[in-house]
Length: 381
Ligand code: 13P
Ligand code: MG
Ligand code: MG
Ligand code: MG
Image 1 (tube, rainbow, N blue to C red):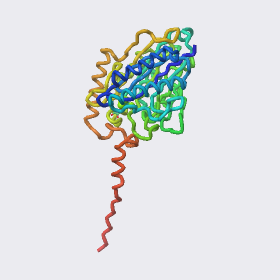
Image 2: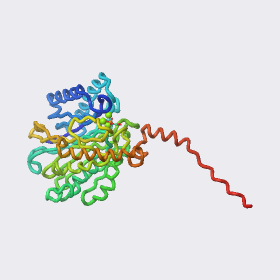
Image 3: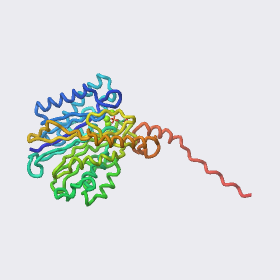
Image 4: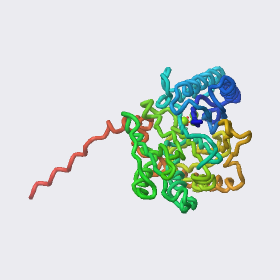
């Protein structure tokens, strides 16, 4: 069976400010997903939130970019938006940026990460397991560093030295500034490792789109790499990417994939999407209530049975004592960074504020600049 995992995620309203979706919104989405499983559109589905973003994780056989799957997600988000509006919630429908997308919802606001594979539970994949990352208050390249380390650096993934992975992985990197369409370059790790780093260091412009095994041609990773403000033409909340990552066997193991997140590395995001703050790993369904508005990321893991259904339980990877230590460190890093307020590296550069109110403030001031008159040379006595 050719199986597709689709993750489609949107911020469509939240309680008490941009913290979390309401219980009724979650129930509305869960109800629609249950119906779609019953009527055979989906093989399986799972709903969770990270901050105020609701992610629908689905398996099906309709392929990537299927208009039926995408339209289902869009209509489901519209139904939850209606619930949010009725309750007067903040930002109702925020990420639904167009009136009615025809077919695919990529470029319409929701974050989309999808990958497909032959699902036979034999050969290179005698068992199929995967993880889904979902981030909130976070820029589009938030996974650049951790996924590079997991799939290109044996200091983090010693498994890269094993025969199934030693030929490395092909990174598909997207230029998110190209509004003409998806502009992608393919570079191989380890051979092109420094070129990959030269692009991925810029989290706001370049993002990992997918990662593919060089040995098996199997896709390991799919990421939703798109900038919301490139779509909307103005600031409409942070990009908040999602990623699907297949693990074990011919791919990195879960601990090799999540250990780079122990860095709590600095990313663009946080309050008004305009600061540089550490990415804090959190359990599923965590609201954003900390003293700042830290970028957060959750990670859920599933196995998939012969029919494409999820295992009856899931693993909540960051819901663990080990990550409490990282959360404390993320908070300490945040306090350090935020102690310098708006100055320099603590906030995103001017270009990233381009469509925000901060830009308007500066534009107004730019109009008031005047060339200083040079002092006249003194006449010789
Ligand atoms: P959201 O993308 O969750 O709306 O957050 C953006 C923001 O501006 C937080 O202050
Ligand atoms: Mg929001
Ligand atoms: Mg959000
Ligand atoms: Mg957002």
